[in-house]
Structure formats: structure tokens, C-alpha cells
Amino acid sequence: MAAPSTSMVLRKRTHATNPFLLGLLPRKRSRSKVEEEEEEGEDYGDVCCEKCGSGSRGSELLLCDKCDRGFHLFCLRPILAAVPKGSWFCPSCSKLKNVTEFPLIQTKIVDFFRIQRSLDATDNLSEGCHKKRRRISSLAASKKRRKLLPFNPTEDPTRRLEQMASLATALTASGAEFSNELTYMPGMAPRKANCAALEREGMQVMSKEDAETLNLCKKMMERGEWPPLLVVFDPKEGFTVEADRSIRDLTIITEYVGDVDFLKNRENDDGDSMMTLLCTAEASKCLVICPDKRSNIARFINGINNHTPGGRKKQNVKCVRFNVNGESRVLLIASRDIKKGERLYYDYNGYENEYPTEHFV
Image 1 (tube, rainbow, N blue to C red):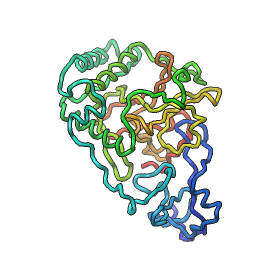
Image 2: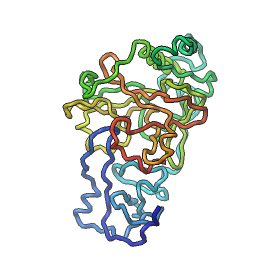
Image 3: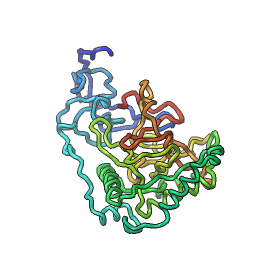
């Protein structure tokens, strides 16, 4: 790697172009207070990144709104995928240096996730899950089409509380509330717009058996039987997800959920977690999932670096869109066996190579 340039270029405060959506068309550049300051001629010259010392790549150099020191988006830990809305403060000036953990109190967790029953109660759901796994693992079934598997919940109710509390911590810190379904809000795309038949290149139809497995996973979560996943905070990657027990290949990890909106309404949105829901021949009908206000654990599963030899080796989850009863749904599914303690990663560029991943850890 070449050494950072020591020359300093005179420039004003800069605003990086918004990143591309996951698998979508290029985004338009949005207006911001930063650009207005540029037009007014306010000078922020001789700015270099405090981490690498380079003044290059000015379009990706972010200035702290308190101390005016510069930081490349990709030099920050965790990395920023886009210039955030409103004011931004560097790690030294930020008041949010420590993440406040969600209280490990059963009643609070039950209320946060709207669990329908006591977490330590037992029923036939998990038993049905284990029976289904045994049938699928038979030799006869292996010769047929590979079927999706339901997740295998942790038996210990206390450990399940810890898993849920870790997600509640991440959602609270991100300013989002929990949702495990696609949401259709007034002023956004209506549910009738989600028509899988409009997909430009067609969409695979989920089989009846796989749909039953997906519904089983949803019902288990409603009743407090949680996927064996932990959300942890990494100083380099930010919030990320790791397996809390071994997970078999083809297990449903989660559905990607959030508010459904038309892409045309979100072209100037700086969110870095939007997901393609429907890609139609008519651009005005393309849909995206926006998990910034309502979401689940899918939002915190990180992407691989498509530009390094080891990037794809880390991938253990795949993103698949299905036609489920005429509507498009996005699932994250284990693409191989995952060991306990292993972090989950998938390819953000599963459909088109337009999401910038060259600085991913």
C-alpha cells in the first residue's frame, strides 16, 4: 500500500456522496447544510484525516461539528457507510462513548418484544421444530429438493433473555423499535404495491413446506422461543451478530423487515441499511425495505468485503427473495454450517455490484 500523501489540499468542508442502496440503482446526491456552507464560501482548508494523516479522498472526509477535525468515513471505527444526517461528533467529542445495555429484566424484555407468553413456559412448537429437523436429515429427504430448516432455540430461558436483551440494546441505541414483519405506513408504499409478479426477472416461489417452516419460526418468536443469536458491539464493525450455538446449513436466520417504500421516495435518503424488496421494469414501482425505524436482528448482520481474498470466506449467510403468497419477502438463510461464536456475514451485493464494500473489515 502506498504511503499516505503528506501534501495538504486547500478545501472547504466536504460532503460524501450517499452510498448505493443494496442492489439498487445509483443514488442522486442529496442537499445538506454542509453543501449550503460550501456555497456560502466558508473555508475548511488544510484538513487531513486524524487517523491516517492523509488529505486525499476529500469526498469521504467528514468533519466533526464540534472540533472541526477531519476523519475519513472508512478510517472511523466502526466505519461509517455514509455522512450522517444532522450534526456529527467525532469519537473524542461524542457523548455516546458507551452503549447502555438493555436491562436483563424479564418483564421489560417481554414488553419490548411483545412476547405472548412466559419465557420459561413449554409448548409443542419447539418439539415440532426438532421433529421437523429429524425428518429433513433423513436419507430419503436428502435426495429431494433441499428444504429450509427452522432455527433451533436455546433451551435455557435465561440465555434466551440475554439474547433478546442484546438485540434490544442495539435497537434502542439505533433509535428503532422491534418489528418482525414488513410494515406498510401511511405516505409510503401500500401493501398492494408489493406484487412479486412484477419482479423484472421473475422471483422463485416459496414452496408450501418452506412457507410452513417460515411461519413456524415466526410463531416461535411470538411465544418467546428465540433464534440462538447475540448482538455484540465491536469497536471496528459496530453492532454485529454472532451465533450463540451451532446453526445448520439452510436454517432460516431471520426475515429482513422494516418499512416498505418506493425507491423513488428514498433516492436521497442516507440510510445504509435499505434492502431491495422488488425490482420492477418500471422504475417508479421498485420497492425497498427501510429498517431505520422498525426492524429486527437482520439490520445488524454485517456484509463481507467484496474486494479482499478473505472476504468471501467469511460469508456464511445468503440473502434470498421469495414469492410468498404473491408478495415479495426477503430471507437471510445460513449458507453453510455455522459454529457457535462465529459472526454472521452475507454479501450486500447479492444482486448488483453497486454497494461500496471496499472498506469493510
